[in-house]
Image 1 (cartoon, rainbow, N blue to C red):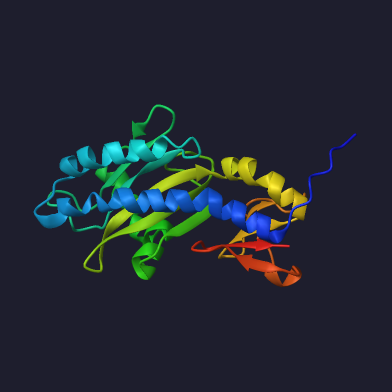
Image 2 (cartoon, rainbow, N blue to C red; image 1 turned 60 degrees about the vertical axis):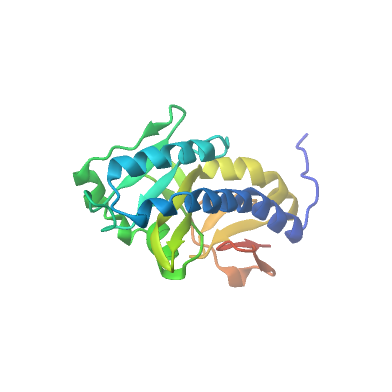
Length: 220
């Protein structure tokens, strides 16, 4: 006999989303601040990588995360135009530092970089298929690292969409709810016909609640 999910409310769903993402945002912000003094003088990529590695590993100690690190604003390093100090996977392997790969990606155009740069606030990008790091449906959480209003880069973490679903779906199932990003695309849904990444129409739902400090809405 199928098990009926325990009934939950839209407020329960909002709280669950905030409880999942907000501590990660806070951690990224705190760790990113530790890198600010490095930019007081000329900074080389290898120095940045050495400083960022223990911070990334601290983020990756959270079992929900799949990748983490710091991505510098182009033009701020003494020896590289672009640089990603990023580690990923169970082996905590550093993402390749190939200049050709980094520059071809031109992360300035990526939502996870340009949105914090434009707004000065944290952001959640996705779900999207991350062909550079995981080859899986991913959400990237990024927090701007600022000095006197200038963004030095972003401290970020990757979370698999499957992990978000595993942690939140039971609560969402009890309310028949859908979680959508600010592009009105589903992150997860209790509705069997709605898949992650698909467009959803907020006007088709009776209730839309925005999660505090996050570009995410709960739709019921």
